[in-house]
Image (cartoon, rainbow, N blue to C red):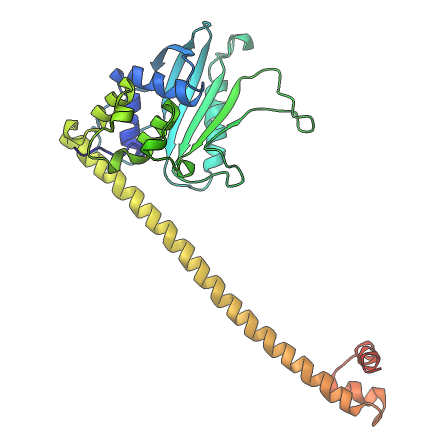
Length: 303
């Protein structure tokens, strides 16, 4: 079997955002957001996946957005995004999308009490917080000095950094590990590992990710998405290399120029040193270009 890469926008949306993926998404969110607790009773996918109809249009696939109902009866909006490239402004976009989802819930006549909490779950294929060792990071509003939570716990940003997840099959201990392993390794597998296939929702995710079950349009769109990401990564790598090379060249030129200046300065000081006690200070300054203060400093260093 060949599985599509769940890190690609198209594949991620198809696996987790299809009409028949509700049970998959509930399992996934309970694991990553609620630490494996069965908090989500039901959910509605607000922008379900549709097979590609517009060819050659980038970013046809939007983030997954769902309204979840928790076991206590409360509702939340969850935005799920899989991001492969660390593009400029990405961090601001996460905040913008979360704030927008929160603020656009109401019409002008509705009460603020009707606002439901928003969770932005972002999975990245790059490291965002190198200073943090954990794979999953959670951010909420807190008081700056005392780190006390804001009274209304309505906006939460959760980040999952896939490169930090290093576990292999024998090390998988819980459903969080198994979902992260699926995201990281599905593309490289030829069969469903027994240890994670035992979870019905992950087994179903593998079934949807089976390339044999895709239409020709979906296969083409998957290929285009992968090529686009490879091209973008290549462009980023080239830009980094070009920037490093330019910096090295500038450093060499600056070093040469600095060396020349230091050599000239050293020769000037040596000339002035030899003239001490032979001619007056004014003459030394006129010949060498040194100031009176520099000449006095030279005299002091010779004592």
